[in-house]
Image (cartoon, rainbow, N blue to C red; front, top):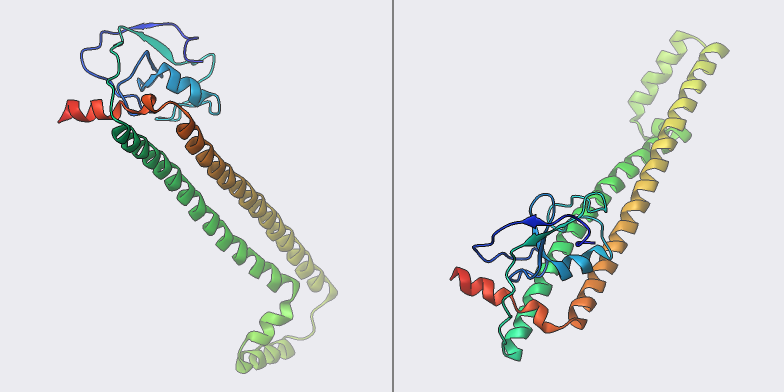
Length: 225
């Protein structure tokens, strides 16, 4: 967790914003890339993740977040229910947008893989049914191929054997690529579903937690005005 690592002595002269709740950080801790979080925020985050929410660097017992000595302990101001409601709404919108962007990126990858999968299926179909490609050619090309076949003479069994072997090798290669793409599609679909569930879980968790934890955004806004 966030308290397992050694402490870092740091004198805070300016308000620091938590990368998770976007409020003025309380009991600050930092990752190795100096991203700052409230200790309670990172504890909740690490229950379901093992990486920094800002830079995605792994957070492990060997590479934990470190507590900052000298963090501010100022009490939070009391806001009206209307202000707290808008602050919670802002936090949810930011969190929702982050996950929507990630889901959109994964969906684009899925579409690209589907296109490659369709191309491989077309190649596989042409290998399994070579007469289809011949029938789809124009009549003059078919007649020209027949004339060339007639002038070149009958093919020997050895030549047919070589062609069959090459076709089998190509078939195995295509099938292997198809299986890999199916596995990739399956993995991306599972990741997509997992992100959707995580998004819903975070929404429910934010709604269920105390509104006071999300009112710090106004402090940061007022500070920079």
